[in-house]
Length: 77
Image: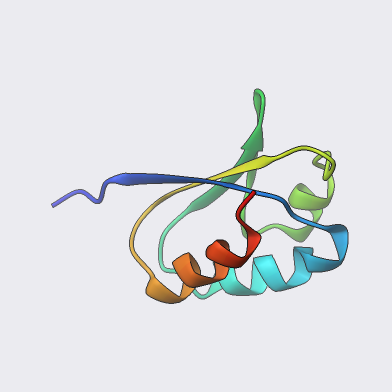
């Protein structure tokens, strides 16, 4: 069975990037972070730091993790 794609809109401060990547690395599935047409690996500190943190970011993933969902709840825009 293929997992359904989940998309969440978050606000991420530069000081929170390390925690975000740490939480993403615990997941056994791919996580993408994007805004507009720019998409980066959600497990890459440098990739995320290259995004414009003043904008809402979209987190997309195919998988389930209650812990990751609860973490994203705190970042929701």
